[in-house]
Image 1 (cartoon, helix red, strand yellow):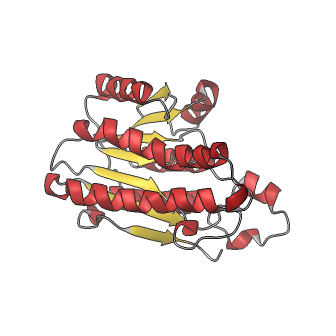
Image 2 (cartoon, one colour):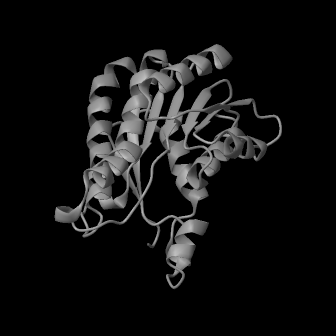
Image 3 (cartoon, rainbow, N blue to C red):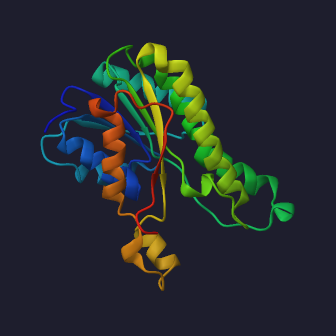
Length: 237
């Protein structure tokens, strides 16, 4: 089913595991794609992995630079003429010391990666999403957002803030017909996580393409009455 035919989807973090899976899933359903990440070579690789016939463009962008994000959104508008879906996939994870030993740099790094990127992209993209056109924003939080864990304070706090930001955006945009939701994945089954946790039961983890399907649902017409939600996607992890 080509439910996203004629719609432009912006995917941040498009060169990462989840970003690639999300981009491919949207492409298979007819979307036009704007792929966003920092590394142009990795972006080119992600674009090359898209199904044949998918209309797409890549934009190497520092999502922590508001001016660069504004320039990127302007480029997407020039290329495609509209933005219908913003999938904020970019983010990062790191363990760390106890809170009382956490440095400003460690705190700021995860707040920037997981929260400021979402803020910058939403701020720049929202004015370009047409009202009552099926506009969708989907953010990525984490299971760690709803229950703090030791040595993960900055990560947990940044992902919890994504939920609150999602709820605030949903309330602001509901009268424009734009929905805003987020997903809360458990442990993703990625090569990096397998290398970090070789003895874990990887079969219980969440495959990126399964999480991508939830993101697509939240971006679809089927979820038109869902907004402000934080959807758990834990698998058996």
